[in-house]
Image 1 (cartoon, chains in turn green, cyan):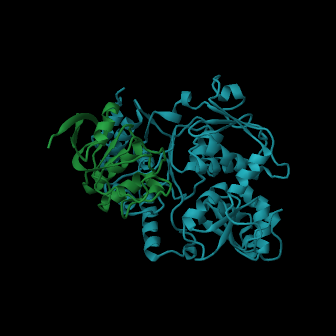
Image 2 (cartoon, rainbow over the protein chains, first blue to last red; image 1 turned 135 degrees about the vertical axis):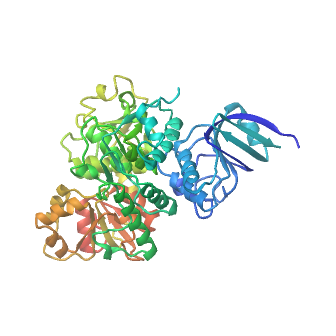
Image 3 (cartoon, each protein chain N blue to C red; image 1 turned 180 degrees about the horizontal axis):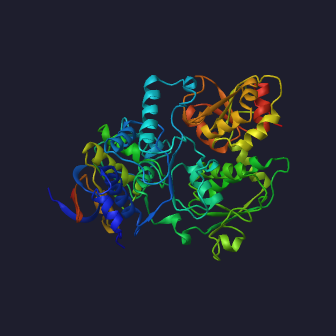
Length: 143
Length: 413
């Protein structure tokens, strides 16, 4: 198995790995994610019905709603949240939700901003391993 | 573009002002980095939308702050909770939901937040001044504070509104900065139905603006500068429901819009919308999922919370005969006190009006199961109630709502 490394920026530190779930459209966690099951419940979302639980969630950006952090934190508390979140834009709602889960429950859900030029290659992998430290993040892609 | 922390910010982070403030500041630093803020600013006040019980994580967060000995560092009001602590008998949800909801409300009060439990803190002694830097949650309150008062806040939500309150600091970005407050969309009202009252026009305009302006700040031309402040409240609430509007300008009425050029900062808008009578009628119609003449289960008024002026407009519409179905009116504790002081509570009760405080019909479990269709004069309630309460909704003017409560079915005037 060959592994490729990518540099990225740490938004919330931690280490995780998992299979990829790449969102085709932005998702609002509030009203769009069932925190009890980790299922996408926004019926208009192309991936409605998919589960984010323990996946490395690739979402280019958030949806700009000011709610959603609590839904993410609650999903993580229940073990139904993503293993890690990989973004292109820095979404404060996602960052705060993951931070709160880390502070309250000691649960790691690293949030990382990838470089735009790496996105398609990362998305082509079967699974990703992320290590996000204070000085930057590294992503390994499993083909 | 690094974040520049002041000596005070560093004190907060290292715990010199307590562990709760340090926790809040850690969150704020990550948040500020994500939004690209370069510094923090002092805030004069906060409004925290953290009292609606949606799950354990929010309760754990508030109770952790209490355990850590936290107190807010800026005057802070609270948004609605899940239960009416003044009228607990109105709650029809589960015991567990009621208990957790009340615990969440109490935890926030222990942190030093004022027990206002209202989505309209601007209708109280807590109303901010023009130009005040504040950190507010609750979409309608945000829109009102920015637009109608000219105070400055971004759309703060889960955990972050409380974190700003616990530190007295907010990230300096977005609508805190003058250069980001200019209109980018021009919305011209070319014509509107002449049989409409000003509130219905405001709701239809707000609903349309929310849907069509995206993230652009609208400058609205063609509204009556003498319209009620409650109409501006309704406009903002509708726009912040159907869209993400945090600031709108009404030319010749709102404080940062004495004229179009000032509102736009001298720049040409990126978007130009022309609203007509026909489009506005369609917007108002789209807020109803129930047909005219449909049997009604209840009427809900006061989303956002009813003002004392709105009560004054409601009373003459009621007469000696009891209504056929209940009208619920959501208002704040402070407004309830004023209603009592004016001797209006007994009149309202006699007419079959139930006053709800601390919460709101559309986010709580106050209606009987299987209530059927609910009618409201609120664009916001009409937008959210079908999914929140799983009911059919009819939207109408205040007068239509009262006439419908009298007839027990959706009446159009």
